[in-house]
Image 1 (cartoon, rainbow, N blue to C red):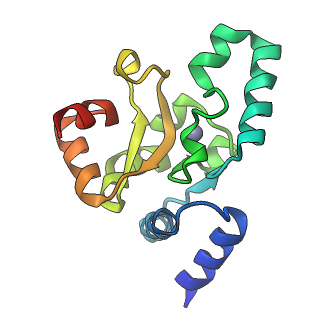
Image 2: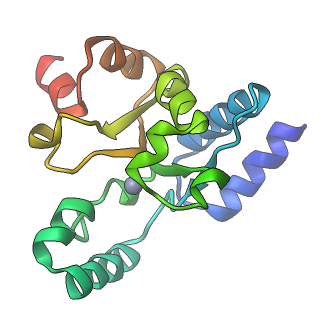
Length: 164
Ligand SMILES: [Zn+2]
């Protein structure tokens, strides 16, 4: 019953997030809660217009070089696929920072996300492959089987794609 309520809330907040990914996100959330780690999901789905204004904002405030390392150009963000979600916690004051991986919630999530079908899309040390700086908060739904393979082999999405 509770899960259904959470799903309904997720559907309201993220209307275009793919249903399967939204369901997996709810399962990840409850598994964390059960172990004492409360995670929050931010900006799961973004429209083209939202992505455009986000990108323009960072170009205007920090320049193109900075913006291109942290924010996808409109039309290129995984958040437009409805499969990506940014995770945070109260300890991070709902912000997105690399130090999330040093918190109990972040550590738990990095270890467990694959069991619910999520990968950390832009891992540390793989910046040259992904083209993005390390983002421990950005999860992408790929399914349990694929996420587990990528986790075990320490593959990025790109490496998995090349090997499959
Ligand atoms: Zn993200």
